Amino acid sequence: MKRKMLLALAMTASMAVSLTACGSGTQATSGSSGGEAKTEAKAPSGGQSMKLTWSEVNGEDYGATVGAKEFAKKIEELSGGQITVELYLNGTLGNEKESMQGIQMGTLDIFRGNASSLSNYGASKISLSGLPFLFKDMDQFEKMAKSKIGQELLDSVGEADPGYVALGWLTEGPRHMFITESTYKKLGNPSDFSLDMMTGLKMRVPETDLMVNTMTALKASATPIAYSELYTSLQSGVVDGAENDVINYMANSYNEVAPYFIPDAHTFGCGVILMNQDKWNSLTEEQQGWMKEASEAAGKVCYEYNQKKIQDTFDSFGEKGVTKLEVTDLDKWSEACEGVYATYDEDSQKIIEKLRSGEYE
Image 1 (cartoon, helix red, strand yellow):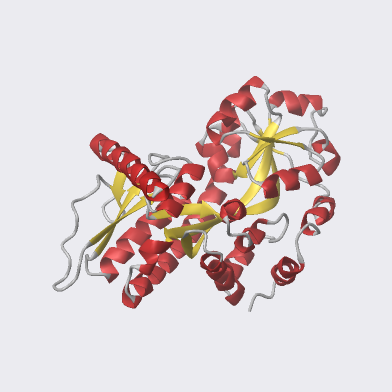
Image 2: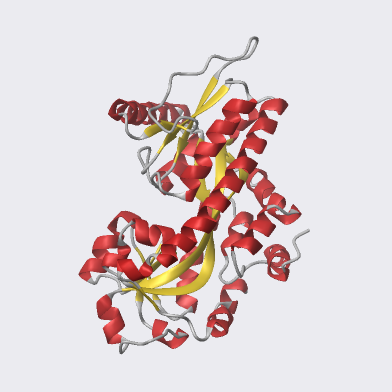
């Protein structure tokens, strides 16, 4: 009874947030129109219309958002208007933690989660894809995502029974380091960057065990800080630097307070389309097929968008005042993280071996 009461309260709160967002006319968008949330589509004859809510913590100019819009467009097309999606951006329906809880409780239908952090929510196998120095580039990650093992990792989410299922991958690209002006001077104004320079640096990381362990293995001082506080933390010197993909680095103007960029590609942003498990189970086999097909379309568009956006962002470094410090000893970075791999159990080691081999079928 208590669980039902809590769920009811949570759903009421979520509905209130949704109504507020719709009232603003700026956060809720339809994937097919890109404008305000449109009225519920009329279902085909004999079908029951369904409107799904998708939460994204980032804004318009982001690969996962582009993928979400493609998903909404495709699912409406495949279902003949029977299924529509309302997309809420910029964390309107909550941050990552709140959205993950919403997916589990059923107050939210779809959310783009990070594979690296899913172990914190009951799905540990898929988080192995976020291990450090596992992929050399986006093409290799995309190859994994489309392979047999990529599907196995997606299936493992539902098998873990965390309250949601994984429909598909959204390849976001490599994550890198960046440091502040004062940190750069403290290091002696280097022309390039090496592993020994990481020692003792206070580096902001997401609140995930994997990222904390990775930064610790690199001899830095892992400092978990809320993403919303990162800019001011860099500006005030609370942290010496941070890590993120280059698109978000520039989109959030971190270049203004941390203009030295270190392209180490220590891990890859592994976005995953997550759906509430009860909602998924309520779909017919045909509808589930549509959802899978829409997820594949979303993944393709997201990958292509990010490939171009990443290159364009690097090309803008000169005009944005960013100095790129090339890493001279990347092999040592990878070796330093071997201890992170060693912490996993025997079953996980088998998956890790497949991922490290580059042979995914």
